[in-house]
Length: 143
Image (cartoon, rainbow, N blue to C red):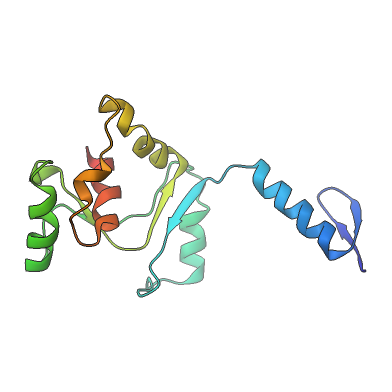
């Protein structure tokens, strides 16, 4: 067992198990400000510094998303826009990259959609599309 002093609380804790328990409790007590959605097959091209600035910006309502509201190829047209366009007008369909960061504010807007639709979920409209997550979040924010 090793004694560790935590600067923020001036407590000494014996053993790594206690440190892990305390860390877990601290993380649970503070809700996250950002929600990060990643792809295992694609990496964003930016420096770690640029990413940290985007994630921890002063503006807590800031999200990180690059989105288009028109298909960029035949795949997107046939397997995304045409499928979702049966339920949502095409000018309201948006597609983002696989890597996005949503602020708590923007995530809460998406979570409020069923209430605005009289208890209905928006998600079923995306069941039969390809890469539905790339469409769902930006379209939900665009509605």
